[in-house]
Each structure stands twice: as structure tokens, then as C-alpha cells.
Length: 264
Image: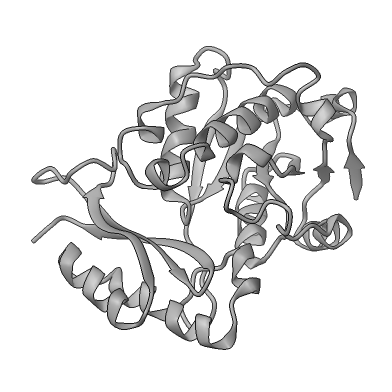
């Protein structure tokens, strides 16, 4: 398994299937690598933690980092190479300005509660796309708003990445139903028990019932909404919708979502 930090060494992997991550790999990430393998191309996994993705009160400094373990996990499911650039490699000069797509500013979900988050996402992912030059990039749908943001960014920036296709992958859950997340490691036993209400709430038929269920279980709810799946704006009759939740169990912020289909 090769670990590359110099972008000049990426050339043999151009036209790859690409899995961008912040490390701290778990089975959710490994499912993305397995999906990438299905395209019959070299699979490149990146590990880079972009500080702007974290709000001032979030856990950038304590975000788990273990590159050796990440490499072993990635190799175990068939990744061909890990790209682990330093900040100086990503941004040899000051980070460029970037125009955020509508999905990063209009829904008032993650964008409202983490105001710098999607700028950090777009900066890092755009730079990685420029360096890696993939044909496919695979993103998990647990961060569903992020998935839409990346899709729209690629569409808006054409022909910058004209061959690139963004591929979504389903949410992977633990046996108890909790969506896999690197932040789950910070949950106490009681916090995790509380957090299981998130999965249940996603199946409630109205936003009020979603909120009430979460509140009864002692979760600090930031949003519990049902939105148009394509835009994350208010639902439109006859179009698929998705339920989305952000809530804190103890001090740990968790997000999850579920495709509802059509509203009754």
C-alpha cells in the first residue's frame, strides 16, 4: 500500500475512483472503498482534515487522527493508494476564494448551525479533485447536504472536472441502528442510548412528531425537518422528500437522514 504526500506522484492514478475522507476510518468509510472497487479502476483514498470544516466550538483539535490505522483499514478492503497531503501541499498560497452552491447556503440546516463548514468542504474537495483528477468520487449519504453541495459544485464548475461523476453511497449503521460516524467514539453509554432515538424519529410522519420524540429522549435538537430531496428546501407535491436531523447527545453532535419517498 502506497502512502503519497507529493502530488507529483499521483499521475499513475489519474482517472481513478476516489474516496475523500478526514481519516478516523470506520465501516462506513470502508463501504465507500468497496463501492469504488466496483468501477474497475485504481482506488485512491485521501486523508485530510480541513480546519474550516469545524466551527470554533467544535472538535478540530481532538478529531481522531491515526494514519497508520487508516492505511491498514483501507488496504484491507482493497484501496490501492492513500493520499495524505500536508496543509502546505493543499494550499501552497492562501486558500482561494470559492463560490458556494445553493445547497450550501439556502437550506438553513448545516449551513445555519456550522456557518464555515461548507466553505471548508468545498475548498478541500475542489483542491483534491484538481490534484487527484478522478473519474468517480464516492461520498456517503449520511452527510446528505454535503453530498448535494459537492454535486452542485461539480456541476457549477464545469468544464473544470468534465469527466468527474459524483456517486452516492448508502448510510451504514451499527447493529443498534446508529449511523456510523467518527464522532460516535465520543459517546458515553448513556449518550449512545439517547442517540438511538434519532433513527426512530426519522420515521415519524411530521416534523413536530420528530422533534417531540427527540425531546422526550433528552436530545438537544438543532433541526428535525422534512425537505425536498433534490434541493433540501420545502417539500414540493409529487417529489421525493428526505427527513433530516441534527441533535446533540451529551456534547456530541450527530446527524442522520432517511429517504421518505413521497409525502402522504
